[in-house]
Image 1 (cartoon, one colour):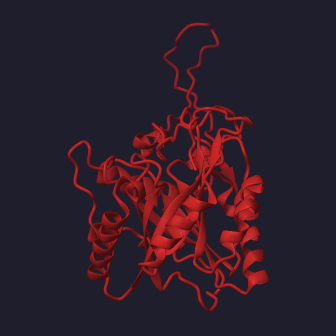
Image 2 (cartoon, rainbow, N blue to C red):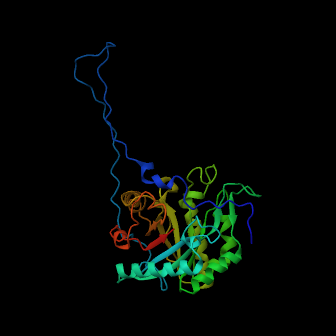
Length: 331
């Protein structure tokens, strides 16, 4: 199926490179006033107003106290290593940047590297397909997104089968919603080896076009998707689903403390920013570690992480993070 009018947007907006820099901490300056009753400066002692202070936030607690994993759960006893992208675009990630056989052979190599770096944790290979792609143009329905054809999803599923890999279907909804996009994919999400990813970056519920500003999801959106997946698990007697939420700024996901955990769905908050290693680690600390939800993920970009001459982080370096990510994505 062709998409002659579609401009496939890379799954990283121009904002991602300065992820951590977008939320810099400002130095606190105590308020003070001089005694100026006469309208001029005086030599009397400075009168200081009391400064209102907020109670300190409680320290993050890891691991998160959540539901006991059900039989068939992938996390936390396995680590997922996923190749991300779309076969229709070489720019959106490694999944489409190489011919299928070369891509799968590279996945084999990366999986082996992770097994060597942490021999105590099972490595589960995965292909992470962008199944709904944000667009620069509104399209016929004005939703700024393109739904990929079933034939494309089937193709990726067939690739995954050759490696005993699981598949993630990722949604960049544009000006659509999860409520409009998820039901269409229910037949795939009802399969035991198919899981879900959502990208707040391209959820333009606050207005604007995809790629011009960073979008957002709220806990209510995430809870809807969790409930949708949980119902499928119960209805089809499936093992728990893994649910990946991309994040590289604080406003991308609001009200994280209100995200509801369900034993039928395992939520991964996934650090999606690119840049040099120290920036990526700081983004992980600010947006993942500081706001515990359930499990954590970390993305590595073959191009964007290394284009300024910095090396791609190795599995051993990523495993130095706390908590150790159980979902690793390569783009």
